[in-house]
Each structure stands twice: as C-alpha cells, then as structure tokens.
Image (cartoon, rainbow, N blue to C red; front, side):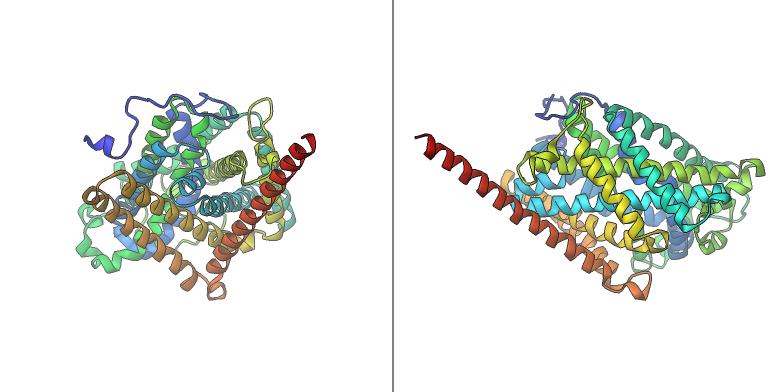
Length: 479
C-alpha cells in the first residue's frame, strides 16, 4: 500500500460530487485555501501574538513555531485528511464524530465547534472596531465600538448570503494585503537587517533555548497561532473535486500559516531588537507589525499596519460565521436541528444559519465588549481543543476499524500523543489563565458548551419522536 493510500488521499479525484443543497462545484483549491487561511487571520494573530511568543521563547520563537507545526498540528492535519476521505461533509467535526464515535457525541461536539466559530465572529468584529477607531480617532468610544462591530457583522452577513463565490473572492482580496505586509516585513528584515550579531542557527537551537522544557510553553502558544486551518472542511460540499480539494487545502493552509509566521518570527528580529518586540503590548496600535513597519516604511504609510489588521479581522469574521453556518446546516440535514436550519436561498447559501450566527454575534458583542476580549479567547481555546481532541479520537477509532493491529497501532501513536498535547493546552487554559480572575473560566465555558450540546441532542430526540408519533397516528387514521 502506498503512503497516500494509507492516509486516504484522493489522488485521482474519485469523489467528484457530494449530495448537498449548497452550491456544488463552485470553489477550487485556491478559493478554499484562501478562505480557510482567512479564518486564521495572519495579520491580527501576528499583531496580537508575536510579542507574546517573543516574550516566552525569545530568539528561539521560530523554533517554537517549527515544533508546533510538525507536532501536533501536522499530525492533526494528516488525521483530518484521512477523515475527510471517509466522511466528507461540511459538518466536519460533527460528521467525523457521528460516523466513528456516536451520533449523539457528534451532535455535542459539532455544536461545540459551532460555538467556537460563533465566538470568533464578534471577537473579530471587536478587534476590527478597535483598529478602525485607532485609524480614525474621532470614532473613539465604547458605544461607537459596539456600533462599528454591529455594522461589520451585518455587512459581512449581506456579503455571505450572496453566495460562497463572493465570500471566497473577498477573503482572497483581504488575504493578499495581510500576506504582503506580514511576510513582506519579514523579508525586509532579512534583506536589510538593522540588528547586528544575530545568528540564524541559534534561532533553531534547542540547546540555546534551554531544552524541550524551556521551549514547551512557546510551542503551546505556537499551536494557538497555527489553529483554524480545518475550516477548509466546511467548504467541501461546494468544492470542485470536493475531497481532493479540501485534503490539499488542509495541508496548504497549515503550511502557509507556518511559513508566514516563521518569516515574521525570523525577519522581525533583524529589524527590531527582540527585547523590544517582546515588551510591546498590543492595544490597537498594530503591535510588533507597527514597530517593524516604522523601520522600513515612511511615516505617510504608518496607517498600513493598522489597515491590514482591520482586513484580517474582517476576513476572520466572515469565514468564522460561514464555517459555523455550514456546520449547523449539515447538523440540520442530518436531523439534529430543526429543518429551518438547512434552508438555502437562491444563491444556495445557508441564509438562516448565517442570519442566526450573525444575530448571536451581535448579541455577544453588546454583552461582552472589547474590555472582555479574554472571555472570547477562553471560549475559542477550550471549544477548539475539545473539537480537535474529538477529531483525533475519531481518527483512531476509524484506523482500528480499517487496518490490522500493527498498522493501526503505528498510526494511532502520533494521534494519541497529539491528543495529549491538546488536552494539556485545555488544562492550562483553565488552570493557568492570563489573569488570575479567569481561573477555571475556560473549563466552565467548555462544560457549558458540552451541556448545551447535550440539550440539543435531547431536543432532537424529542422532536423526532413526536414526528414519528404523528406519522404513525396519521397512518392509523387512514387505515
């Protein structure tokens, strides 16, 4: 058996179409990849996270990203490539768990993944609002931030209901700006360094980092930076040669994020001393992006560092709402949610779930404004961890069903180790939060997500039981 066959890669495109009410055959590999990378939001992640990574790992920040890429994220991506072949569906996590674990578990974890995406929508709207206010100071104020965030969500709802083609084109446009600035500034650091006596080799030296124990916290943070590549799966029903397109996109998106952040982590050190980068606190000013941009760009272009974070937040908002909407659409198609959730419009977009996600996003935005941004981080972290763990568990169950014990064991070991790493991230999210006031908050939010998913399971069973009773009663009456 060849390696690509072992992992279920659809090399010859044997799966040419999926049964769906969405717009079939609309997206190519480029469209899906750009959309999923938009969910990762490279410019905003670089602005908000790179300084933290420098403060944790110092000069060895590129090493932390490298380790996180190969383990656990590449392991997770390969597992999802295999799952996508066996259970192709816009439901993603929901379908994987339903097929290989249990339908009820699939419903609960599918809802948990949807919650993660729903939380990202207002979070990105708030970040976009913060940077718009920084760019236009006359719009300052908490009320204005809420209004701007609401307008952003409404605007991208209007875009999304026009169909997935429009959504993908807009995401691609935003992403071009992000990559050009984030990676471009990294290249500038390499081409025209301003900091002397830096060793490229030392950036990847485990010994200089102080060993695995010392680099470990940076690796865990690198996992956060590389997450969300899996949103490519939510577009599988609208992709040309669906399985192969999404399998390629999963690996392309993860690798692209790795390359972008590696260029930034290396090149920015050559532009600005790493001690200064590590001390920067992102507060709507562009963070380390602005610090590096000030070195290479004229003052008249200082706005560019803020602008790319705005486009990044908008792309994340748009794609997160679409990912959640498509997950809920597929859950409805499989009978776990009311039929209205599977409604599509003339553009074959899931308008009802898009509208519902947008309304929930607006409600959260007004309930938890910008000063509560850590709350969104907690929700997204714990729900994504639960979703990824469930996907790895589904992969291991699938592997033991399809392969002999020796092969299944070899494939399961890296998946199990990746699962344990993600479980540890979930543990630290609650036990070691950024603020002591948020102790265990992530755990409570994760438990609440699982509990609400269980209530959806019970509601679905009651609804199906009532429908079955009605049908049986009608048949009895006719007889």
